[in-house]
Length: 44
Image (cartoon, rainbow, N blue to C red; front, side, top):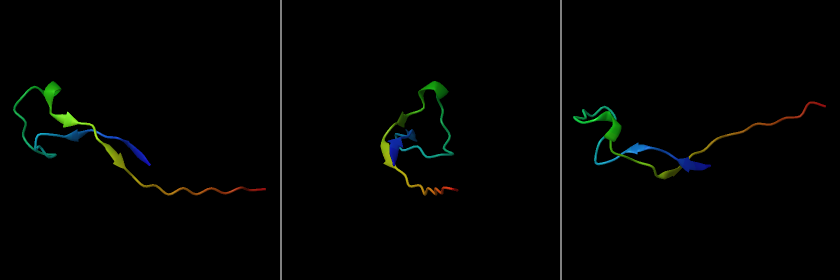
């Protein structure tokens, strides 16, 4: 499964101090793949 995610850009990582307007935090939105497991059963 894949989807669009928001990640920090310009070399920032989570927890970095950002001196600027919080409305302009540099982010980009790449597509990433994820995995999941499903289980289904029928009671008849």
